[in-house]
Length: 128
Image 1: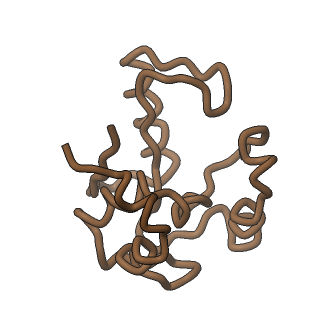
Image 2: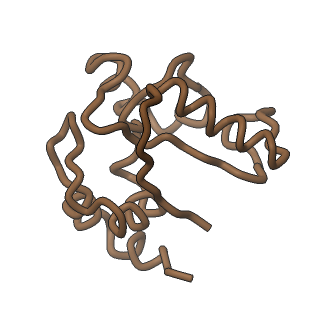
């Protein structure tokens, strides 16, 4: 099951990520293997118009070949999430809460990103 939420508060991105990781741990999540089976997976997808740690690093991770994506993990927080635009299971729920949010690097809205996805990917994400 996937969901999206907009959070408000004064914490910075690293503090938000640490809070999400603490919540995962409280539900029994152990980080043993990249993209391994997990009880709970909470991701920080974006934070307003922040690009972290910088545009060049973000671009490097966006362009990471598919063959390396499951093998390499960044050693720092990358925002917006580098594969946000490719994942229907992220974008379709995000469409419900932030359809007009603009990706700070591409300038494309969530609504436009969803429209660019293959139809089969979009319809595979069904509401409960």
